[in-house]
Length: 256
Ligand SMILES: [Zn+2]
Figure 1 (cartoon, rainbow, N blue to C red):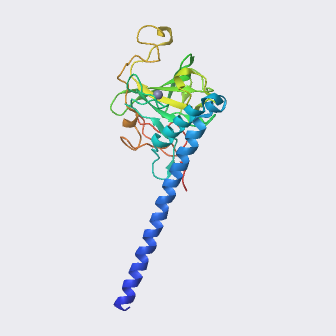
Figure 2: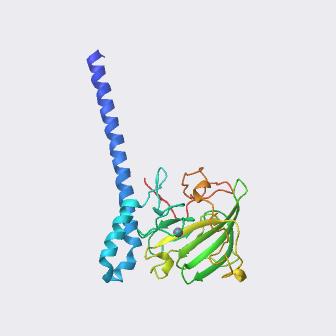
Figure 3: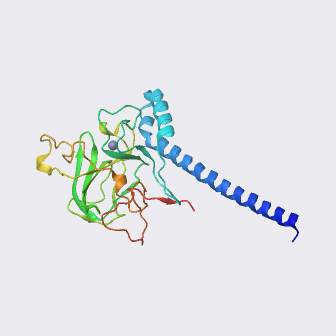
């Protein structure tokens, strides 16, 4: 092979490969944008029933499309996070009074919410402000923290109190209609991890209004993903996950 032929072969090879990887990358970010747009639009269905709030809808939708975080791990698309752990921004553009103790993940009407680990259902309660909410004891993390997990603002419960659940089991559906004040007109799951569970009979006593009495000491769910800290991990059937680690509370879609 002459030097020129070799060089042109090499160049073609390089151009071909870089164009392939470029188009894959574009494909991925287009899918991520579509994912964010679809979830933002769908999570704001409250406004379809309240046509008088068009200006607010425009504002909240724009905010969602700009600030919803796509945390999809490689090869998957997952529901976006609209307000992360530690955030001072709410789901609806308004600042929070206090730092966010959980993560808020937007989603579709009646979408399945799945257990982040094996566990036992401590309670299913419909709270005036939070709406339907489950608390599940997922045992302990690898570093010996309790994983008492609140799944707030859901719709129908798919499990009962005292049930044992397996990681990936459908435990609830997101609501079709957003009715409760704490949901702030945006359909989302609030996932929060506490240490000190408030028994049902302690409800409404000081410090026990909302399921746990950890005040501002809830744990960051991103510390406990099965793939490691800050590595959102998708539940997959037939895959083994270590006890004490978490997987995402929604079913992930494979991108290929
Ligand atoms: Zn929240």
